[in-house]
Every structure is written in C-alpha cells, then in structure tokens.
Length: 194
Image (cartoon, rainbow, N blue to C red; front, side, top):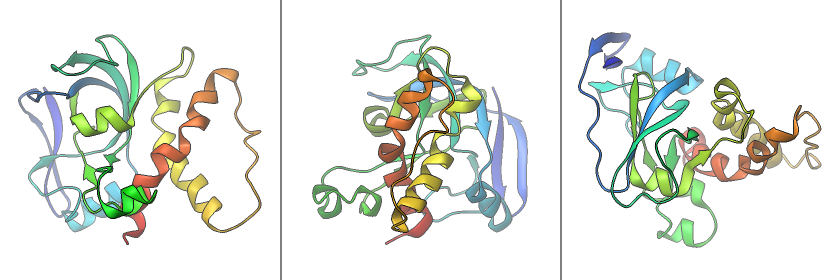
C-alpha cells in the first residue's frame, strides 16, 4: 500500500509499505479521509514527538474510513462499517483514569498511520474510541470530530457559560456531538500534558 512515512525533521516520503498486520482486538481501516492538524505540522518540523511517533513511522492520526478487517476479539465492528477513530485511548486503570481524569492517563496510547491506504487501529482504541458513523454523516465531517472536540473542550475549560450546540446542521450529526467529551479528554493530554 502507499503511505506517507516520517523519517525525521521535514522528511516525509511516499512509499510502498506492507499492509499492517492485526493483533487480537485490532481493526484495519481503509482510509477515506485523513486530516493534518497542528500536531502533525509540529511533528513534521521537529521530526518526532516523544509520546506519539518515533521515526521511521507511517504518519497521521486523524481519519475516518471503512472497516476492512477485524481481528479475533472484535465484537462491535464488522467489515464495511463506516467509522471514525480518535487518536488515542486511556488505560482505564491508572490513578487518573480511576478518578475520571483520563486526559492525564499515565499510559495514554497513541496511534499513527492515517496517511496510508490502510490504518491499523489498536485494540484499546477500538474498545474506547472507535465510533461508528451515523448514516448521512460524511467522512470529511467525521474526521473533524477530534479537532472539534479539542476546541469545544478548550472553551469548556475556560469557564465560559455552557456551549450551545445549535450549530449542528443535521439531526444525523447528533452522535458526533454526543461523543465530543469522550474523544476530547484523551486528546488534551497530548496538547497540554500533565
């Protein structure tokens, strides 16, 4: 498959690489939309991100796609389903997770690989942060869930009175709004650390 592989500072190459091999609980997605966020730009300029990606590695972490294959142990997803994957998943077991602060998780799992024809979504992300798309929700809209979650969570953290979600244009987008907090919490760990 074709993939954008990060090799170091301002060094990304389009290459042929093997389709990722799945481990129990993993899902293989066929990428339909992959976005570039501020973190990707920063990683490109620096050549690495100590917690998220160490080169050489397939780049990118914001995407929506179609389930191509599921590994043993996956029950909620099947080939052909349209989904969006968050870029990380908390462990659920550390002090912070047990005290409802998953954005500070001691073992926050990040994944990369969105800039490829296929992406392997690790089992923990599949369990906690792989979300099916409602009918009518387009891939390009779904891929914006994580960046939108960061914005909404950031505004909520300012203490400004509650956000009105009146901007949601269609009834089918309700599921996106309902998952914002679930996706935003682990993402903030990447943005703000502890």
